[in-house]
Image (cartoon, rainbow, N blue to C red):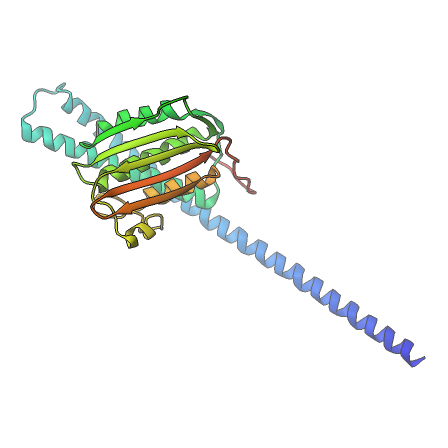
Amino acid sequence: MWWLVGLVVALACGLAVAAWWALAQRRRIRELAIENARWRALAQDRADRVAVVSHEVRTPLALISGAVELLADGTAGPLSRSQDQLVDTIAVKSRQVLDLAADLLADARIDAQLFQFRSSTVDMRRLANAIVRDLRKLYPNQITLSARGAAPRIVGDPDLIRQALTNLITNAARHAGRDARILVNVRPSDEGVLIVVSDDGTGMTADQTRELFRRGLAGKSETGNGLGMLITRRIVELHGGRCLVDSMVDHGTAILCSLPRDARPPSAPGVQGAL
């Protein structure tokens, strides 16, 4: 009889412990849900603020860029050599601020998961050619594109890929030195496409190489904002790819980014808006 009483007591204690544990778990889940909602709200607020600042910066800079183009092509009259150099400086610095605004907005929206992954077929040769053509107008470096063989095509977000490739080339142009030559190599790989942006410029130390893709330190200098390479890596990873860097002081830098043939768009609850 006593053993039966003991068994009943043990079962009762076990049930009580199980009930307590279940209650504690439900409480913890509720707490985590509240905490997640709070952080999501903070991320949303940050993204909204950055979006406002980005818009306010882009609008006047678009007007400045338009005026600079008119001056550069002689519409407003001929320029002296020194005036022409000043116009070039304004054009480059305006583009840098526009790039900063785009990077800040992309970083905030990726953090907050407030974007739509717009998948479509991307002709990487055509995209790279358009980017190189545009950047040749902004930087004095010799920028060469190599995309031999069949045109590599992947499925991904063309706007995000454009931003990543632009950042790669811009980073090389800003940090390799004015006389550095930049080679953009786009070629098919077994998995999809391999993008290699290399230069024969100043290169980086081992410490700089390790810090390249870290927030706030990503190539930060007087010519850069420190976000471009971080954004590039995040975009590549969103596509299921990866980035590698190989650099040596005074021997140049090569940054390799692989992208799969068919990117898997990120799935997360509450994803909305557009990057």
